[in-house]
Length: 162
Image 1 (spheres, rainbow, N blue to C red):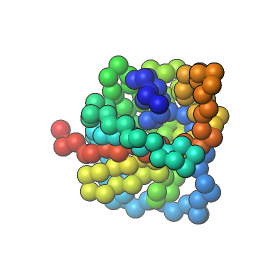
Image 2: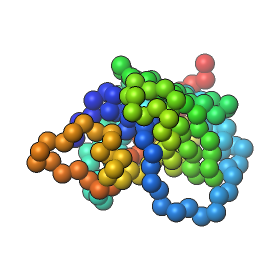
Image 3: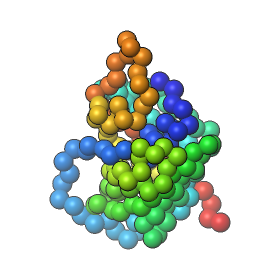
Image 4: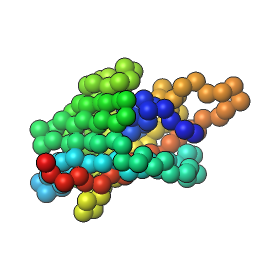
């Protein structure tokens, strides 16, 4: 399942997500919030469809995401861009809202991401249901079957500060 550039950014940062019920929200420690701030180079996208791992999709480092301390973010890649706001829901999750995107369907949509930062590595993970997958992807071939659930994990490495 190859993605177009616009679909790639849609999968990377677009559409709302359904996530399992979380424990009572605990605010993130200031150091966790600060650890997300900065520029991150996208390395690969990992996907699991209905419990089955799909081949990794390396990006070759072409996309760069930036999270700012003021609660805004942006993502730029070859021929596509998106930006918006984010807020911490608890110590492990953020909610991102798209305010600008090369894919108009995404504008105004919020999605929840699990955030994991280990040193200079960031992973953002979200879970999509069938309805969201249908919104993101071009119409399937007549004999194609789409998954009912997709877990998408994007892996980044930190860029040096300017």
